[in-house]
Amino acid sequence: MINSLDLKNLTVFEELHLDFGGRLNVFVGPNGAGKSHLLKVLYSVLATSARGPRETKETAPTKQYLQPALARKLTAVFRPDQLGRLARRQAGRNRCEVALSFDEPDLDIAFHLNTASKSEVLLTKVPATWVEKQPAFLPTRELLTTYPNFVSLYETTDLPFEETWRDTCILLGAPLARGPRERHIRKLLEPIEDAMGGKIVLEDTGQFYLRTQTGNMEMHLVAEGLRKLAMVARLIATGSLLDKGFLFWDEPEANLNPALITRMASAIRAIGNNGVQVFIATHSLFLLRELYLLGDSDARYFGLHFEGDGVQCTQGSSMDDIGNVAALEAEVAQSDRYLKLANAAGDGATDS
Image (cartoon, rainbow, N blue to C red; front, side):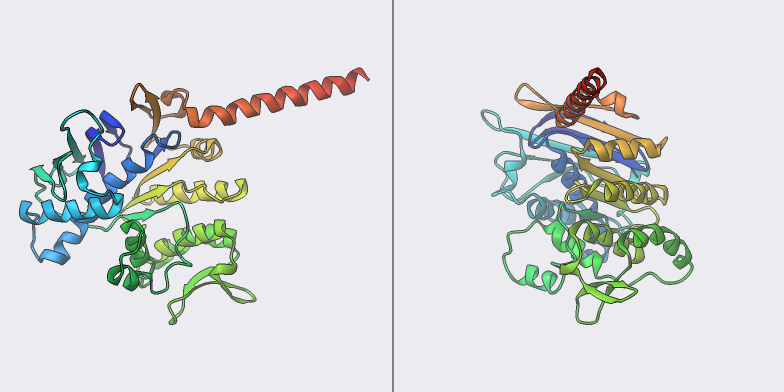
């Protein structure tokens, strides 16, 4: 579990200290406030470490491996023209610093880069052990229709997509989990499959289908909101979202109607309660309220606010702790206007 993140001069953030919850962490803020950047920097560090044992065959990380590997991952995930573009814009040279603290201190890591960095980072704290499990990153759009041949095409062609897409497609294509975990997986899948009206299956052709009582339905014919639920179902079925994992999800509410957002919130809670540390970025008041209503004593909320030429963050264990977030104020104001209009119409009907 990640305990905290410390940043200096990363993109829109001058200085930031975040304390995380063990199950659920929700970033709320307007467009451009850096929500996705926070998800991506956390994901990049974890993904680099998780791949290390396979790439190095070493039992412990080394600076020689981590520095270039982390630089490559940050570049592939953020896709800047050069790595130094991740440093906050200021006159002259500026240094960006990042430090992650874990509940297992041997995983702690810290590094920095500056505005002149082209493709290198410097580690100031090297972890003593690898992250055990590959994290999952779900982008704003679904990837099941993109999956066929995407990984091989990505690795042989210069495609203009963040590497999170490739990583997620690899996880989607993993074999189904077998053994003692199957009963528990089935329990987690049942409410999601009920919402989808079927089960997600990967055929030998490399195509995903929704298997219903009347047969297989091509993913392109399934509503996009249901396809997002299907991605979650597939990652649960393969074991990627079980037991001490990490899930990063950028705007899970995108293209979902309120009924499906309610189902999605329940799925997010179930994943967090199953030992996965969940991080989501949203500007949906509906999703935020659903997550809050479900309740969790190990959740943290982060409100991002523009202040001066940067972004500040308020944080706490409830919605009330994060203040008035601009991304939510418009929805609240609309609700107030609607209620006033409805009350006025009701009073008019009474008078007549």
